[in-house]
Length: 313
Picture 1 (cartoon, one colour):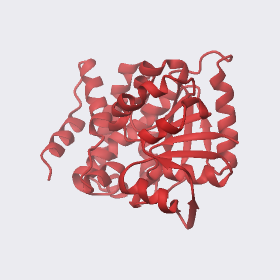
Picture 2 (cartoon, helix red, strand yellow):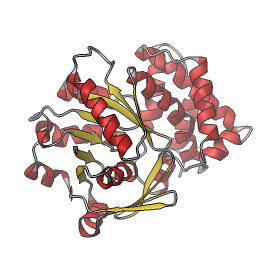
Picture 3 (cartoon, rainbow, N blue to C red):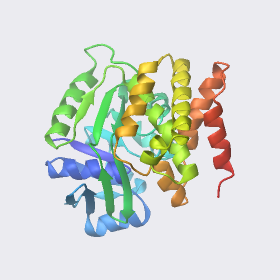
Picture 4 (cartoon, rainbow, N blue to C red):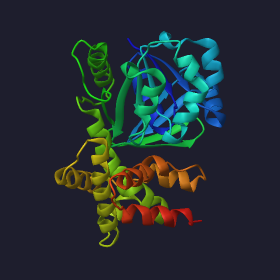
């Protein structure tokens, strides 16, 4: 049985929390506002495909978390926040996190979250991760909806390193426990490569969906729009070279095929725009533009969509 802290029990974190709780693991969740209040009063409800889960799991804001627990009360801390919240999280909980040795697994969009955790806590405590083939959102306080396979890819950041690294043993334990809970897991020895492959998809569809209001299926099948999607993905492949990841044409084509064949979903960035929330634009498109600039390259598709989004209502 694992003791897990999930920071950010929204659509993604809430889904994994419900599955892991149902399998008998001990969880503590963090959230805020009406969503937190609803979970504290009535528990967490998750709608997934044709299933519904309900779990009564301790949930707190960050202040109460610090008062009640120490970091090493947990076997793992999973961060499922928007990437825009990573720096504020470290400002708020950095001193508390430094009191322990527990590893931190980031399940966030973008390629810049793990470096922030590594800088604050040390590389030896960081696991990189991504949630793939899942779309999840809070549909009302205390209730989240998630669809898709919901696979987790995780690994030692930035590379697998020595076999004596205790994170190898933890990853084996996590894989067994998560799969027993019905969560498919891949353990990667090259997690930065996997993070960049996901960024290829995120940059291809997230900003454009927020601009147009269209789902992923429409974007990838419309004759004109799919050219823009593919162009933004190609720019992400070029950007990866700045980090020494060197994605290939095959990676580009694989990721375009994957998102084209996935069930059409509203992207998280489109949902955020509709709800008036901050967009993860800098973490996704900004990361691509900056790295292209570092190499003296332009990213015209990404730059244009970002410029249009800046002036969109």
